[in-house]
Length: 389
Image (tube, one colour):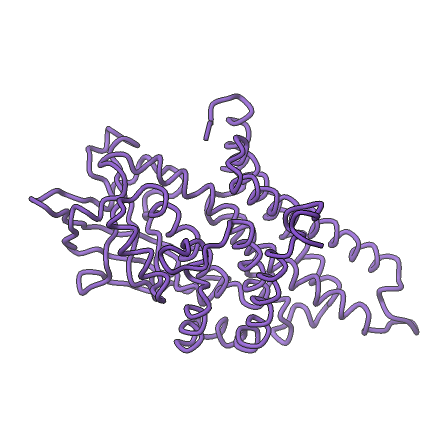
C-alpha cells in the first residue's frame, strides 16, 4: 500500500520505513541495554553516539541543514519505537529531536538555524530549560533565571530543574526573564546557551524514565551573544507555548512506546503461564484484562498519530488534539501498565520483570510537559474559544 493509497497517513510507506529502521536499531542496540540504563541512570556514551549517527536526536531537523527531515508523524513513530526499548533513551529523542528543533526552526534567525540545526544534525544534543523550582505549570511566573543585556551580549544567571538531556546536552534553549516579574508572560525570552564552564549540572535520581539525563542546571553568569536570542526579547512565552504543543505529542508517543512494551510483556506471559491446566489467557478474567489493555493502547495510538498529522498539516485544531493525546495516553497508560502488572502477578512486581520498570516510567506521562490537570484546562479553554493557534 503506497502513501497515496493508505486509508490513514500512518499506514503509508514512509512511516512504515521509519518504523522498521528504528525498530531494528532499538531491538538490537537499545533494548539489551535497557536494564543497565535504568539501573545506572545513564545511557552509555557509545549508544548515544550511535543514536546521534542515526539522526535520532535531530529527527525534525530539515534535510537542508543536514538532518533527517522527518514529519512530526514520522518522528513520533521513531520515538515510540525507541521508548518501547528504553523510555529514557526515547525521551532524549523527544527533547533534542523535537522540542529543541521546533523553536529554532520556527522562530530563530537564519544564522542561528544554520549554526544550531546543523550541530544537531552532526550529533549534538540539545536541552530545553524551562521549569524552575518556583514554577512549572505557571510559565508566566518564571523568575529564577534572568538574562540581562550588556552591550552585544546577555548575561544568563539562575537555576532550572527537571531538565531532560541536561546531563548530555551540548547547548540549552533557556527561558529566562528579561523583563520585570510584574510583566509576567511579556517579560520572558528564549536564548540559546552553549555548554561551558559557566553551566553546572546536578543529575537527579528520578523514579522512572531513568537515563534521560534529567538534572538541575545552574547558569552562572553565562555570556551569550545577542544573536542567540530566539524571536523577540520579551516574546518567549508564546514560543514556549508553541513548543509545548509539539512536545506534548512527542511525549505522548514516548508513553505509547512504554504502553506497547507493557502490553507485549503481559500478552506473552498470559500465553505461556498455565493455571488449572491451561494458559491463563484462556481464563475469562485475564482475557478481559488483555482486551481492555488493547483498547487503551490502540485508542492512545490513534490520538497520538492524529495529533501529529494535525500539526503536520497545520490544522487549526491541532492544539486540542495535542492535549487530547497527552491526557488520554497518560490516563490510559497508567491503567494499562497497572493491568499488565496484575496479569504477571508476583513476577511483575519484582525487578526480574521489565513491567516493574514500565510501572515507574508511565507515571511521568501524567506529569511531564503539562500535567493531566493542565491538559483538561487547555481543552476547556479551547472549547471556549480562549486558545487559538
